[in-house]
Length: 386
Ligand code: NAD
Image (cartoon, rainbow, N blue to C red):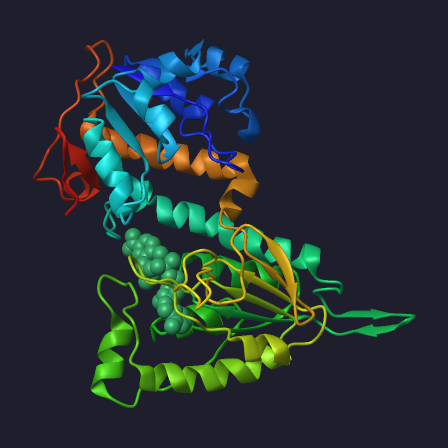
């Protein structure tokens, strides 16, 4: 099959869907891999490296015009216009973006959004949410340290002692866990909050302290356990008590990293303006839910903090608030390496690798396969999202 790998065009995007490593594997399976010149440059993958892997270096039109196109981000209208009706598209296609899915269907693409894969053991090797959140959680802490005008670790020097930074992590999924691990390596003192009770042990095993907000009703307990490991919106009674506990920690914190998300819904507000006002001057918030919060009364959209501005670094009440919406792209090479392996693993389901010497496999949709069915967003002109 002809597999096209266009350069990503979204602002600030550095990642690429196929690396020389995965291109080599696809070529070995008998596919014709066509990489747009420069597509991997911001991920440290040169045209020469792709060429050495057996890929053809080409232009955007040819990469986008392939039978199958592998991308990182949802194609824009100009890119869609260059794609062939009936082509297969694999990428992070925003399953909750109804308008985006409609455009994929209108372009008559067979489109798979990898973010929609179930969080099961079999799907782990193609779990793009995890691979990218892990990197983003790391980079959130590194970015915070970069903007924080003090040390993270405690230091005892001849000129006096410097206290360790106090870091509060809100939301302990994949990104939050990596943020705890990274902040710990830098020597910070960490406290973390999540609605899911199962994370207490994980936080403690990484050297953090769990901000405990016990459940008082069956409804609270049920919501916290959520569905498929995901949080559901918590009852207001619990959120009020959580707010009180979190507010105490935030007022003491030097750095807050917030990652709390609820799939398909607005991110919860966990850091109010009053909490920001209570923070010490020079403290830093990295809001990983930037741009995903509920709309503010003035129409702007924050994240876990309503003062966050997507893709901006702002100073409010003496606190630096970082709203980078694509932290994984700031680690472009490794983010691409992991993403490309996720993509390659997904392709095994729709393009089963042929045995050596056999002709390359043809594309198929196995509707019985739960991963394929969950990821299929558009087919034959209609939105097929489950
Ligand atoms: P996510 O990015 O959807 O959300 C981040 C975190 O925010 C979650 O831990 C969530 O519980 C938390 N959160 C939501 N509302 C909150 C609130 N009001 N206060 C505090 N925290 C709040 O999560 P994710 O990183 O994608 O992980 C989701 C789940 O999937 C986790 O249980 C994770 O362990 C699980 N998971 C399973 C697999 C697998 O089995 N293959 C792989 C990856 C993740």
